[in-house]
Length: 250
Image (cartoon, rainbow, N blue to C red; front, side, top):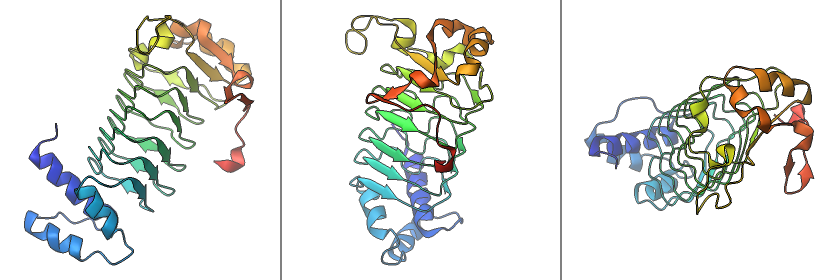
C-alpha cells in the first residue's frame, strides 16, 4: 500500500502532467493548482483521478512521472501518443487497465505496469529500454510485441502467468540479461497451475526473424528456451498471420 508521502507525490505528479509544469508543489498549493487548470485542460480528469473515478486517460504529455497514476483502480484505457518515457511505478496497481497506446515510448522504468492484472496484450513499437519488474504480476498478459527492444532484463516479465508469446521483430538480436526475466511465466516452463496452466503446457514461444532463430537458440541465456523459438511468419493474432511489422506504422 502506498504511503501518504507517495500518494501526495502522485497527486503532485498528476497536477504537473495536466499543467505541463515542473515546479515542486506544497500541500497548500495543490488545491490552487487544481483550481487553476483551464477548462478543457484536464481538470475534470484530474478530479476523477483524485477520487479514483478516472477510467480513460488521453494526454499529449511526453513523459509520465513516477507514481503519477499508481493505484488508479478505475483506469481502463491509456492513450499517450506523444509520451517517450514512463517513469517508475507510473501505473502500478491499475487493476482494471485493459488497453494502452504508447507508440513513441522508448524507455520504461521499473514497476511501471506492475500489478496491471487484467491487461491482456501489449504492443510497444518504439521501446528500446526496459527495466526490472515493469510487467510483473500482469497475470492476464498473453502477448507482448516489442519490435525494437535491445535488452530484456531480470524479472521483466516476472509472474506473467498466462504469457504465451513474446514478439521480437528487430533484425538485430535482443540480449537476455537473465533468465529470471521469465520467472513464474508458467507456459515457458511447462509449470502446472490450476488457474493459469492446468495442463502444464509448455507453449510459451518467442517469435523472431526467421534468419535469427538459430542464433537466438545458441545465445547466452536465450539457450534456456531454445526449443521455444519460432519464426515471425508463424506468429498469429486472432488467427491472422502478421509477418514482419510494417515499419511505416511505427
